[in-house]
Length: 377
Image (cartoon, rainbow, N blue to C red):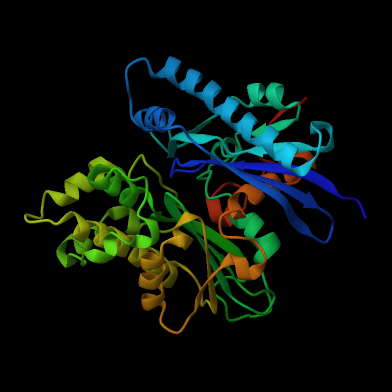
């Protein structure tokens, strides 16, 4: 049985660091063999945040920060190889998502653009491994959103012929994959579709950084000392993005501190912990509303991403779901922290094998496309 080794790199909108997964693929199985996480230095994280909006000399800053990211990615990959006792020539390729700086599908000319930085050419030089990156651009060129891209992977590893499943990834942004059972003809869709439901952790992370100088609210402990502000939650849920029909995707271009501050202006007396709890409720309600409004019947819900560790968030979502149990993807064989990194190893494999990896029903592209730019080593 032929086994191929790929590495997946994921650095998402939470900006906490880079997840690295060593993945073995056979015809029958996808298996993560080793993993590694490398946190971003605080200074680099601040520089990336500053790039989310137009700044002075941003072209030069973007290029230099891209180089810095490539060095961090390479450090993480090389440490993973040491841990796994492998050499670079045993790896077919690295799938590198890169760090999203802008994501504006459909902007101005109807096509728009997306930008993920990380200098894939430099990453290939520093690791001695072929790198595939820039996965989103081809889908956008074909009229799609360029995101989310992981539903095709979710379909490959999580779909069940007899069970309707929803996979919810809660990173900085939350996105939903609906996996309809192929044998149930009453489904709204017997295939797979997905979209970004709205903010995941990013607004809460920014809020606790502002008030507690912490990077995130562990378990939702701080937020749980507050209470939901109904008027604020209602105002935030009135955001037009939530009413848009899929396909749709979003990011820091919309859901950022300026967006939050605008909503807070309508509320007078605020306790920071109450705002924190309301932000948790926003994530839970926007996910639940998206599930019930845009997805077919679902029997099982599985959560992955950093938000899977936020006890308060998962409890809030479970309350809304009622009898439908909310589980971690761990119970499906892939740990909640590693689904996306493994997905980008899979996307790299699809590219190398000249197989399509987008789902037109998810992104809105004109059809299936081979994704990724190859930097051959």
